[in-house]
Amino acid sequence: MEFKEILQRARGYDRKAMMEIIEMYRPLMVKYAVVNGRFDEDLYQEFVYTMLQCILKFPVEKYADGSQLGAALRK
Amino acid sequence: MERKNTDELKNHFSAYVKQAVKNTKGHYLNKKCSVERNETNYEEELAVPGQGMEDLLREMDLLSDKIFHGVVESRLLLDQIEDYQLFQAITSLAERQKEVIVLRIFYEKSFWEIGLIVGMAEKKAENTYYNAVKKIRKILGGVKDGV
Image (tube, chains in turn orange, purple):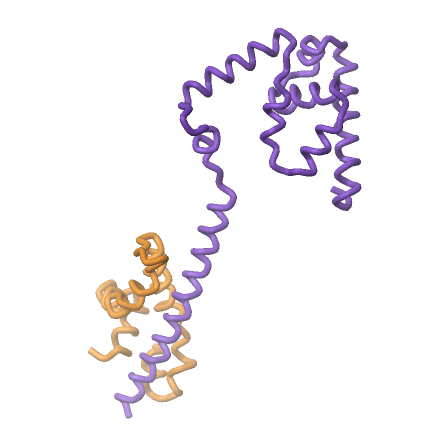
């Protein structure tokens, strides 16, 4: 499945798609959740919450280039 | 073309997420720091090395016993004040005023009780307290503008 399709589904509150995106960015979140050489579980949870917000708030229209992709995502 | 678009979208999304994660981390650490700064662990602070909580409580009991025999351990309590200016201001007060301040603030006694302990009328104790506070405020106000 292409990224735009996953994002599209995730924005439609599709749990599986949301999880997929979170999985995709897990390494990034793990990397930033390390504070002073220790993995901070609470911070990681904050990141997951941030990720969900990002999925819903990401301004797709702005980056979709006005092409059919944008139209598809705007639906 | 389609392929390129979706990659581009992913890159934009990745950058967006990365920035959001960074911001979250900043907020989280700031919050954590401010909590740690403002939080005091009383048990730890009270516990003198080599002295258990029980000893401390016994000592406190002893102190409150002493009060009613007319002895006020003001020095011991005043030593806990960390603000140097405030400490100076209080130590510069007259002995009577100091006793009343200590009883009122550290022991949380009513003016009537203070009067009983120090040996003065209720009204007199109240006046002494407010005069002392006024004096402290004046001393601190001279150094720190208007506090």
